[in-house]
Image (cartoon, rainbow, N blue to C red; front, side):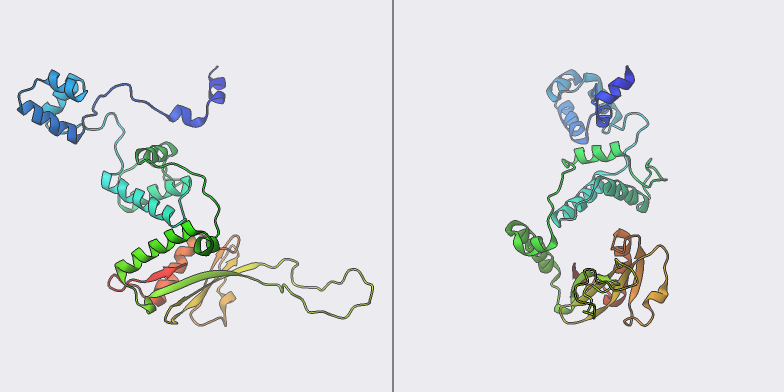
Length: 298
């Protein structure tokens, strides 16, 4: 019977809990109101009726002299200020069209707790916050998981009026705040380079032969990503190469451009880890500081 029950309902059904009482639900604002009404001469019963709380809850809160504490062994992980900081970060990423997935948000919550030395009960093996915790967190802050509309960078930049207005509005706000000079405005882009030639030169072959081929190192070349960056004043950041490999081999950049660096990934494309490595490479040559910030338009 129970197995059939589980099959008929989605997983989140069992994790949706509704409180059955108002025990220990007196907030700071309600507690202050209780003190005011009690000072005015109202009884605990009258205060409970006016505020919509049980008389015993009002009496206990007034006797304790503070707002309610947590109920049971579960303790709150983040303060209101910390939760707001994370929510603002999520909204900022969404406004820039790089919203977080559920798994990315779970990792962010775990990493935030670890870096700020906050006691938590998240999974230290997977380094992720719990699914129920994350969904409750989103619900508390009026946020949800949405399926995004696919949009290319070119369309965001040039072919969609709404997205174009939002992008340049965000960019203008940042420029008004920091007032970047030309040598502090950088543009970064990445391009894929194939290790085999795409267009082969013509060679001599008999007339009428249907299949004309040429031997190359591999039929489909490996992609190498080259990340290039330059400022509006012409200052040049040495290129950064990303190879499709499992292990680092710095011989690959021997005789390369002066100051260039490299990283390896499974597919030869940039990911979260390699982007952070590139940021370190960028900061090494651009030298941003608190007094002299830098804008990087990727």
